[in-house]
Image (cartoon, rainbow, N blue to C red; front, side, top):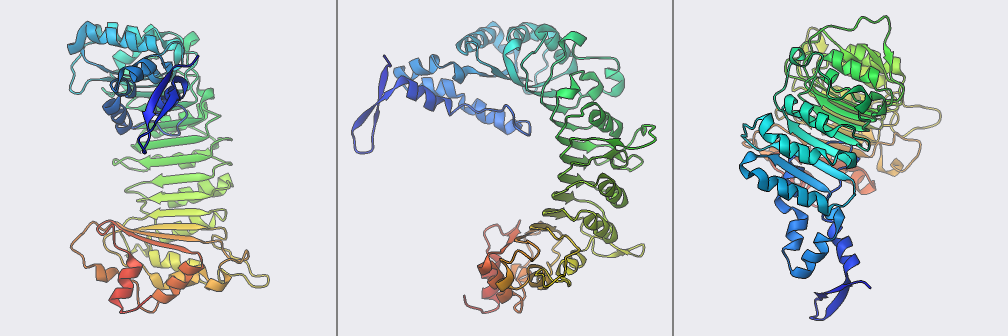
Length: 487
């Protein structure tokens, strides 16, 4: 028979709660990191550490402690700082924690304690205690020097059930330091679906790359990015960040075709010099999401060639801090008629350079607003972004947004629900000029445009303005007040 516990209700009465129900409620306090499309960040682990759900629940009362201690799922997350100051006491606590999880799959997080200068010899007993549970791991996220990591995996042996691996090397070995080093023996190679790498040379990570569907990796060379794509034919989501553009291009007669990649996020590092170009090496016919960020050089022509060559059904495009000229942007957008969502974070340049207009807000909106209009008549067709549903544009350095073009972008409110118009529904403008001393009135919507925008909003258009310096200001209400208009 189930054991029961009582809880107080708002009216002062009590209710009897079965232990099984109480245990189910307790389990809601335990996060599940397995299968996330991105690796848990430091804040996620710190939040868990600040609560430690099974211990907090067990501290409420004797009955809660009995239920918590006998609910294995509460003990399936093991977070350990390698800190020898706790010595054998820490190992005993880890062993007790593991024993309470019974035989359930485990989620493991191991890190060096902040500012710790532990030696591998000093940490080996603690690592060995956790390594004994390797057959139960389905998620692990470890932050330690490469030497520690290599020893840890030798202790663990085969990791048969691992689904998600986060490998973050804290001493950031160079290519030369890691040359010839492999983390696993050939017969012990893990087969994760999700992999997150930081500070680690990919050639040392001799997993079964064919098993991967998601990878996030930073601070690697372009040739490493290319090799990851080539070795992982089943990848669907790939994020490369802080990529320094130097090295040696692979000697290829044609581009590599990745048949399954659907989402690609590429963020160049600060040492950006386009002697190398990943986009000239690959073709992705199934790509639906692309996010691209670079800070110095332009890749406009290369991106257009990449999109045209791939003939992919790209639906979402995000361009971050890219130093694109407008003719490059225009070519890129015309090569992607399937786009439904467009986010632009341009470099703050609205000037002529070498005879070409740089990234221009006005030119883009002019293109969206010009005939044939968004509301189609007879046999007219929209040639520029015909499927666009959402546009997000980030301003910088107090560039005034050209609101006068917006009504023509959406078309008349009476035709807003027509299936024959461009399906644009959302315009989000974000001002990130970072100067709180600017007068908010300078950014008010012009008096002649404001009523037309309000009509569009009433018809169902989402026209949103966010300002970094004035987070709680309603631009529409403020603009009406500035112009002496009433609702």
